[in-house]
Length: 101
Image 1 (cartoon, helix red, strand yellow):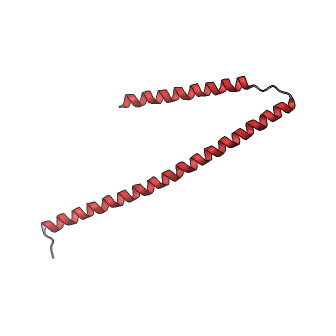
Image 2 (spheres, one colour):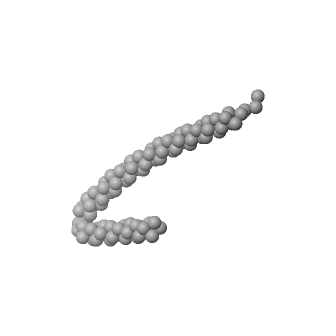
Image 3 (cartoon, rainbow, N blue to C red):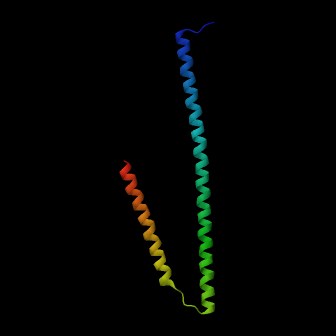
């Protein structure tokens, strides 16, 4: 029972379709895993932000008990400096990506 030319062509087409379906299945599974990872990262960052706020509140309470003046001006300066650094990094990344295009 040898296959004719039409039978071979049909078998090749079916094999290619099966390969496409399998690869799409794996892509969907990977996308779901990545979305779960992304959600977990978001939850972790929210927890870190809450803990950071608690630590800052405790720090200000301790400073008030000791009698140290709050250094809001210095903390706002450090925030501005970190914002400037992050914006510089973003702008340098944008420049490098525009050069690649």
